Length: 335
Length: 240
Ligand SMILES: Nc1ncnc2c1ncn2[C@@H]1O[C@H](COP(=O)(O)OP(=O)(O)OP(=O)(O)O)[C@@H](O)[C@H]1O
Ligand SMILES: [Mg+2]
Image (tube, rainbow over all chains, first blue to last red; front, side):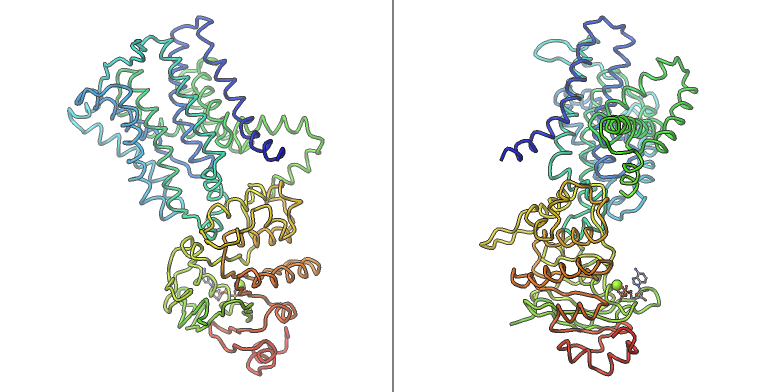
């Protein structure tokens, strides 16, 4: 009895560090940061929301999407078009855009995930390119290459949230919800099902798991996160255009989740923040930062298969456990 | 009583290779049936086609009179056919108990009066409860096979197909396995087992079916089949 209760509390303990970090992040405005800092942080937070969805897809299910920015784009354009043509505001746009991105994920996922294999990476990449082309040639409806303006303000309980500090706090709240949602998925039987698929599809199917349907489902779930991230982005920037959602931003998202580590709850947060602030901290121009990211990605793939956070956790465990390193490595190599 | 599984005219071609050439086979409710045959005779293919891992080129499979020919593997598993693979496998990166939990969570509803054993009880049954907290990937080979058995049992099968469950096990582990498998019919689980070890098969099965080049060449009581000249011929006195 006592044991089972302790087992029930264990997952909660894994959520705690993230909640503490997010609480600290929410306190940043107390130190009157610059507007530039707040803007960067808001962009990072909006990415982190999509990354939490990507971590369900990649970290739990083992599927990599190379067109994830396109799903963010669906959410952003849905928000912009809903505001322009139907007078639908931010709060209603959230569920609508989440559904729109989820539906697109299903449309892309059904043909490419049912068959299995490596089609999915290519299909999602193609989807990203295709969406950019469609948006660019969409005439007045999508605003063509110039894109669309979103001039509506976000209001919450009568307060205008457009002010940078307020928007920042709102994004931190959304990031918290995304983190908790992804944590809840990881620790549910649904999360276990996804991990089973990641580990061994053939065995999973032999145990009655409908592998194809669950892979599509995981992509749809990640689409919900992406759609919400898109709405926040559209309302934050006030202007969206096709190039923001093409293949390069998609590769960046994949990179962020890999650098941070997709399997642990801290990973998306770390990846999103690191990639947003690294060029700023190191004072890199865009070309230099791309080179640095490329090098980081190769280093992470070769040295830290669980991402930066996974590597740190492993190093800490190594420090505090008595097992000699070689024995641990041997055990891990067999996995 | 009608058989639990009725296979008729089952065939499977891989390109030009005929792995199964029209096999008829029935499995009776509550028995432990053995399937033997030389390497490459089509034993694993027979299981693969029954479980939906491969689509058959022809023939039908009836499970309790229901046609399950060509259904997807997950659908067949959920009708109540459990199986283990010739290559022992588990979800290597996940915990041993978590492995069995996953299988239990996807088990079909059996609606029986007796509740099915919990994941922990299944680990007890196969003797792995001491390793419940370990990652499946670090298990020694024999334990991995037993975990595979626990996974298949967790799906609440009424028919269990075991493909060389004792391959790679030491004598002690093999004896333990025989003890476990023998208990299964008492729990309402019919068993069909493939193995090359004739001593093991004699211990487990009262009936044997023999495959050779994708065809069934013998089927009957174990002692009679093992004395059949056709069967002795196939093995050329080598393995018997
Ligand atoms: N996926 C496949 N693709 C092509 N050929 C296959 C495939 N699976 C099996 N075969 C062929 O079908 C024939 C039967 O193989 P199968 O694995 O069923 O034999 P088996 O009786 O299980 O042998 P063993 O005792 O060695 O396990 C062999 O000739 C094999 O090469
Ligand atoms: Mg075989």
